[in-house]
Image 1 (spheres, rainbow, N blue to C red):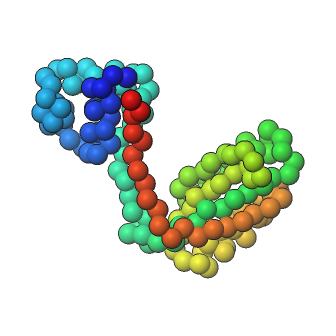
Image 2: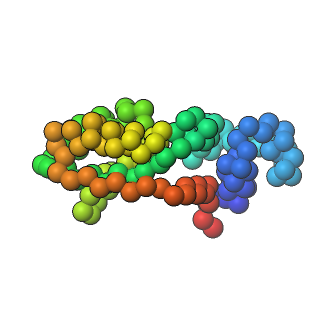
Length: 150
């Protein structure tokens, strides 16, 4: 990645809906150059897609939480099975498979504290390979774009 590729990525993270011409104008390059660079970034897998960022609170799910999960036994089938299961739940925003004391950290968005309790008891704790579950409420979620390192 050179400086121009990094600038393209930064601009598209700021506004992924801008046209190729707008992007080229902001970067001071020809639209044809810009288009080819964006296509190359997509081919190389640097840009993996474009999406709409949604505010869970505006969709009736203002409470976010992180749920730390430890499995027993720690075998491939248990890890893959739980990962698949929890990823498909509509409350799940993100699933992190981690090392250390926990095996998973699950980010969820729910309606209220009762919904969170029910989610943990009815969906997470009930899974057959659960050894331990800890839940932390998220007060603020500040998301920053990934910056290309020099």
